[in-house]
Length: 226
Ligand code: DC
Image 1 (spheres, rainbow, N blue to C red):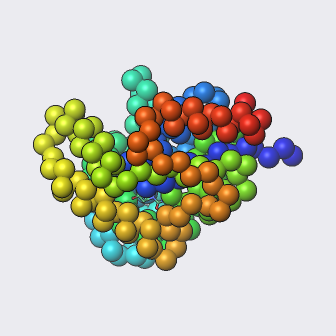
Image 2: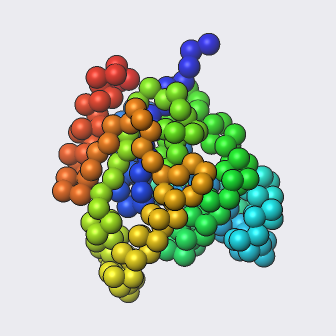
């Protein structure tokens, strides 16, 4: 059996992983796994089920039986539903990110979501976006990227996105949230946010996203994946 190729894209929130992964999956015609979405839905499912994010056993139970569906809307946006209830907007808020990061630190939750993530590995290939794609979920992936940027730059980008959406936000508050989430994701005991030993690290602080994508494509071509 030929192995299905996987390209992993890990890094902290706001480093451009989502954009790069989406562009890459489109260019290659491969599947896309947004693993953060699974943790975000788990956080939302807990709210719906009345389970506290700190009740480890109950959160793990929610993750184990997560009834989630992904549907591509005409706009190209991916709609995410839990038990048929659309949670796409709620899970993408700052609070949704905090919930995801909190439940993601529970080992039994990560264990429960592992097989579900590996199921995305389908021909002709998979682009996997997350924190531990290259280290834990797909350690044998032939090409791994770790995308990063300074916390200040990531907060600035998020600030511009939210302002463009008409939301009123404070830049110092966003920076503090990002730093808090980085610390929680990086210091947790299980699958912390670290580059895989064989990952190509790209710092996008001072590099426009199209140049980051060119750099990524160069590596994809070098490995003969296109
Ligand atoms: O990529 P994102 O911002 O949607 O992820 C939300 C949270 O989920 C993030 O703060 C940490 C967690 N996460 C994780 O622990 N492992 C992953 N592979 C993806 C996300």
